[in-house]
Image (cartoon, rainbow, N blue to C red; front, top):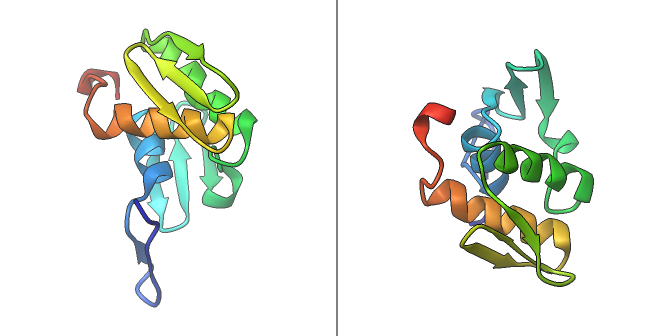
Length: 114
């Protein structure tokens, strides 16, 4: 899914990271370029959360999915599994993001967890 930005009106289309931030991490969109993490009471600018490019950011997703009961398995430099959901990427961070997106986009996480 491509990231789309609509300049001039302050809105953008949802991309992979937006979906993960909202559906897995439970962050709320505060304005067009940042989320609000109500558990920690902090704002996260979209440039400060780049899980496809930053393994530390991707591991935040891993920890959250493990909290939900998913088992994280690494299957090489660029393939991961969360239970039965597998994904690849150019890097491990990208593979984690792709797998998390598959989980979030396919409604595999119960709504009561969010």
